[in-house]
Image (cartoon, rainbow, N blue to C red; front, side):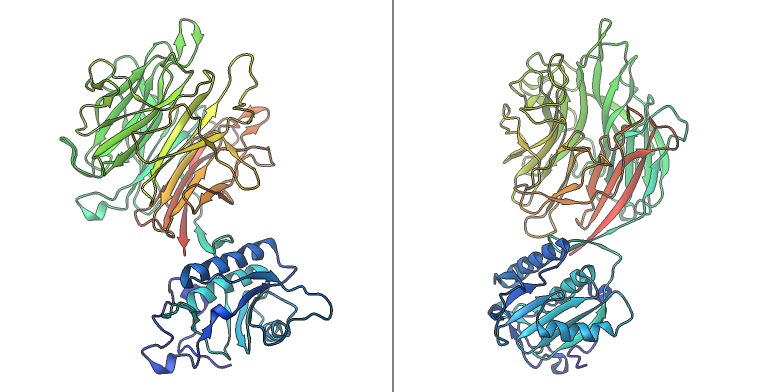
Length: 579
């Protein structure tokens, strides 16, 4: 076989290399192809009986070529009417085991290979053949083809391949390929972040985490810190110095500011990215709800640590509301589920949260902001952290009183807009449980805004759904990487499918167009939301976080712990994303 490249590498070795050449000539003439193939003259043809994954990957190949060369090739299958076979001179990129003679010749060579992960890429006259031992291997061969041969010439139309080229390689099958984009996902083994024990009576929910990136001592950057709602009167702080493989408890944080009510609910952990007031960049912040069932008071209380989460100071309340009880009747009147996001445009740290205290709505989503870590601004201006309550700004306040939007998370995207996701819960007497505007299952919605302090408040938002109509409900979360493609990658989670399956967990929803459309990706966690007629709390309020470089996704969720169908533990997977 004639090898044009001086060094032939298998696909796993080349997964980090992109062969983008300013022209079809390389510095070393011995490595240069004798001839460049003008890709604009080709069409893409796949096998008629290709798997659905290979069909998706073939379309992704077309889109990748368009991105790199600005040429949109046509895509079709290999079927033709008897007697109407295309002329041999027609230029085609053949994907999979097509009915063309060039594919058959390549398959004959491939059949001589013992390894089931073998693939062949061959240029044969007017054809380019890309074929693996099976369709999954062929998908990896498409990745190899893109990374190795698609070159950008002055006309952006060249494939850096000799017209008589043949190469047999081995595909790296250790990653999960996202067929719609040909991104690869390498998913780690699950690690246990916190386990209350096989027979414990407390469940672990509401995990959140942060990767430190703003520490003055560089060796501490990359450290992961996490906390959770463990059903106790304090927050456990957990730390990992090995990228999430192992975890240790470093502190327990109690509320020393409020009297007669306890911390421990719905925490959010965050690293201050800039100096603000008396607090330096890299300060670790923790916010959560303090409450006690027999006290008509809940607070969102703020804590701070300047030593990597080993010791904490209780600062003050960002807001407060009613409690869980009004006399002897249980109601929700409080403030819940804080979420921080910093806006570099206005130098503000925003705290978004759920507010039950308004008489206008059963619950609404609101925010306050600070520029000095001392005063939190609401509608009436600055009231002070410890003074009279300043009414927060509204984000979602539905006209239907019984709608309860909650669990908000917000990210900023490459286009400068902000994406917020939340669920809307309904459990009012006399109404069908969980039905919002005819949509069942306490569905998840989103809003997009140009600014963190400008929202279409009365609009309940847009349903988070796939093109086939499937949607998710309850316990949403979103995160965003701005480094994967021009529009970045938006990831949205919801606890349950719109229709029950053997497992109730949804796929993760991914968007590569700023939330205009979503594509499913199989959830690495398998969990059931009900067992033996009871709610398991599995999948309840997880957290997803991208690394600073946007190439690793950290994902924590709640799964069953031991034999107790009501006890959950926190586990984490790390997903490395390879373009």
